Length: 294
Length: 288
Image (cartoon, rainbow over all chains, first blue to last red; front, side, top):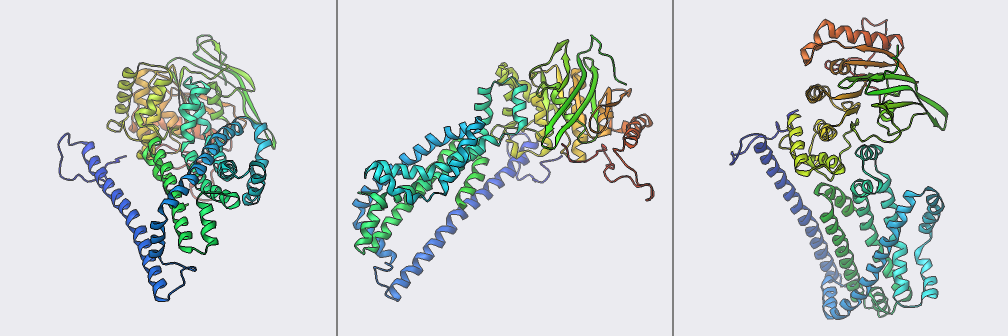
């Protein structure tokens, strides 16, 4: 039972020379290891990316690949620079669509999951519909939305929502259902009412799962917004991609893709940040690992 | 065999039966169980897996309703979850997002106890089970035995009238079990707690109890009630005494007679696999 036996004491620090000390030493080392891990998790991917870019640049120059096929990274950067105003302007439009679609996903998805969890007949009625809604290729539905809602913001938000709400519903429902019976028994034995049980135990218990759903959802929302712009856009990064494609401006096409990628990553990281603020540290470490490998 | 209900008893279990309906038809988990418990008495239930011991405890806690019969506490019929209890499950059932102290304080918060007093008491309890300095650790930073000790502290912080434990040490290694059994004895005898303790382990039951209730295989009913007249506090060395061995033997004989345990005659003095563990003997069959 000696949990501290495997942690030899370093130079004795101030304070009591008891359990706490060797524990502190172990903790310091653990932190250092974690820091080394973190550094590695930044250095390695950056190194990989830089290598790839260098190879790409070299290949583009060496074999003089035509720019309309594969522009060199330097050309893409130059295109980004000269089109920065357009890129930023269109990014804002797309971001708005993504965020609205995502907000709608959460606003509809979480209550829907609650209803599914709490009300069995509803779950039975809705579940098959929900699953088959995911089997429908959303891109195929996009033109329909265009007919119904015109060319404005609405159809893009709805398509983003349609793609992004499913993971929210599933993960939230799963998280709520994952409550062990013993925790409910425990709550009852302590005299906690259903409301208090929900907010003190069940909801926090479901949060890691919910956040995992949100992370998937936000990346899906990006896809949804772009699909919407492809089909009926008058603006936005998706529309810019179409225009660039039409003009054989492949460098601009790549610039648009880069902008979308950056947008997606930033939004994803924001959800991760929110998660870090809400959940205790260890839960986040697991969740974000799962999220990043996704 | 069973006792007649007497009005002075604290807990009175009367003709309790529980029938579960499953896809394969009805399963009788408990059959006509009656016994009483006095205040300050430590009662253990031993029996094979699936004999309804856990069901019995959950019914006694008012957490699941019996199919027939009733539970009375202090003369009052139990028909809803009891809140005068402290409960410990086989798994620690700690909240991952709360520290050791925070998990114990959940009990205090739920009961709107004075925060400062409760916190002081929680620290005191943690110290009793050897966990001072671990107040701010999260469950994932604690070993299995430490977690279970936190959950025992949580069950005691409000000084419950009745401590209910459902195989609390079932998932722990033999050495940790020994330590926790000693910890539990210290906590319980110091407060003269009334406790119901469910276990697979004959030695645990004999060591801790004033009375051991031996259950039959499913459908669980009471096989025999054995008074344990060993002096307290009990020590680990006491497990080696002839008196202790006699009690263990008595329960073992019952299990052998009921086919819960089978000795293989062919092999020279081989015991039936499970029943051998240097410390507290445990019949390790998958629970539930």
